Image 1 (cartoon, rainbow, N blue to C red):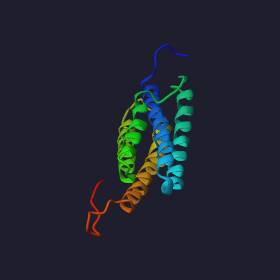
Image 2: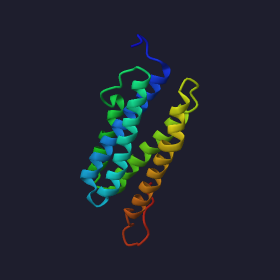
Image 3: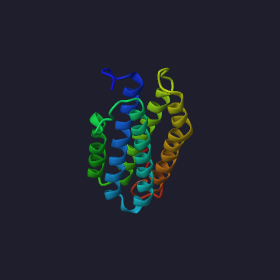
Image 4: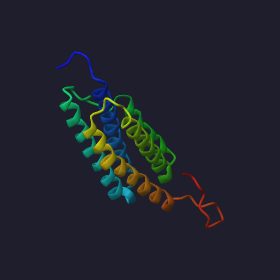
Length: 159
């Protein structure tokens, strides 16, 4: 194994840690949002598949993958804090924000010249479309769980 970590392995490992944290967030959200559990479970499983894909790509680069989410581990704390508000929309808003951040991060990673082309193809053909789909799904769930303004049928725009 090389003594120094390649920039490509470092980038993939950061994305791997993000996917580990995302899977944990969705697992946690599933316990709070019972009505949305099936949808959230599907999204969680896609993040687990993404993590496994990144794990394998890191191994191909002869680098041991991280064993946890690192600083990304703060994301589940945001989900927990959102549930303290007792609002489905708060949890969904945190999840939407983290998905959007993931999209921006994967898009930026594709512009890193040292990243192997097959990895960028995986990002562009599979992971980015998957995450964009997650945002659309979560936005639909958020719209359904919108809080109603007292004395009105109009929802309050929260996300």
